[in-house]
Length: 422
Ligand code: ATP
Ligand code: MG
Image 1 (tube, rainbow, N blue to C red):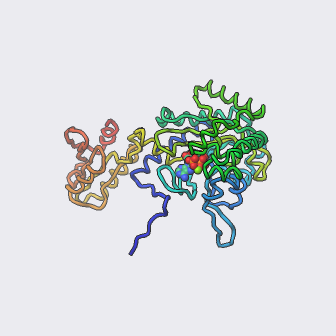
Image 2 (image 1 turned 30 degrees about the vertical axis):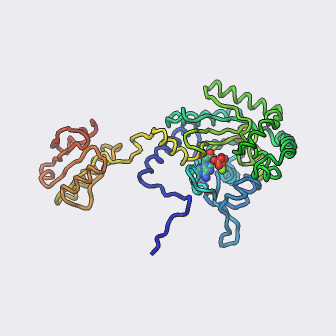
Image 3 (image 1 turned 60 degrees about the vertical axis):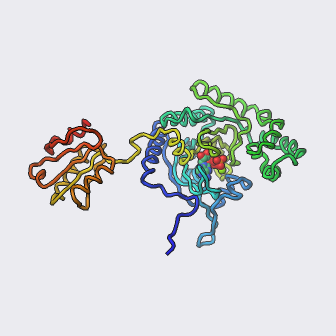
């Protein structure tokens, strides 16, 4: 019979990699805890309208990337392509934004129907951060400083650079949009096909076209930075000063626009050149209009999302994966003969006394030789050998698997101290 396979672009996370994911997730959640951000969880499925209204009808995501279907009740539902809209929906639904600020984070799978390739999947994972109710720019700076700290803790800070821009208010952007359309319309035949199409629908997205001819043309085009309103300009300058003071370096990239409609003022991306074309590991910005757009009271907000798969690839590319992420047991107990109860008890005692160690007990029997082979293969540094003689004497043989240290026999009572000292 033909075996059923996973859906293209949706990966399994196998044990060989899950330790690295846990390390990454734990490091991120610990940094977030230290900045007093709180976790929020929301469903993977939402009403389609939520994403149409927030991300924008003429964005890549809504036009061609969403997993949308009718449920059994004929309602249109969508697997979440990102978390910000869901987060706002949940906050509004539960009154979390009423007269208070919120600093929140979430992590989990997102779904986009894209062409699967390195760093680009159909089910991928994001860790998102959202701060509501603060005008900034101090909170914009905090979000960026937080991510910067995270890169340092993960050992990737030297491999990522921060790109920063301001999109201004929606009004400033509309004026700029007109100027850009006017400029590009007069040169339409020089634009790539995608950009020609976007000229009518979402002209700002042309700014981040990857096409060389289009990029060359854009060098002459009006610049968004010349169209910023005074308030956005002041906001951006203050943010830059705060980042300078915090020692976070950045490049101002006036063509950074981001693919979702809801951004205003600050936008940023952390980019690496170590992963090829999919080099953005974290992206975000300010979205002061979104809460109101979704039916809430006007609420300033800023946030960002990092791509977990890309961060994992970066950790591997830089070879900064700590040993602790390997999930190999520290101790392997070889249990030979009728020693089942004593072996389980010994393993439990070690787990009580050495909670930081992983203790693998050989279950399922087997000869001394075959168990010993498994102990070696497990990667454990120590094998404890327990046979009927040892149980009678309340001892265990300690065999060191990774160095030439001599085997020794030791009383159960002294075992924890010995292992602790390794
Ligand atoms: P890209 O330009 O790479 O398509 P995007 O602007 O669509 O990214 P965002 O919506 O800003 O991405 O999502 C934030 C982050 O989530 C990205 O910077 C990236 O790290 C990650 N990400 C986005 N789409 C995917 C995907 N299909 N597969 C893996 N990671 C992704
Ligand atoms: Mg995309």
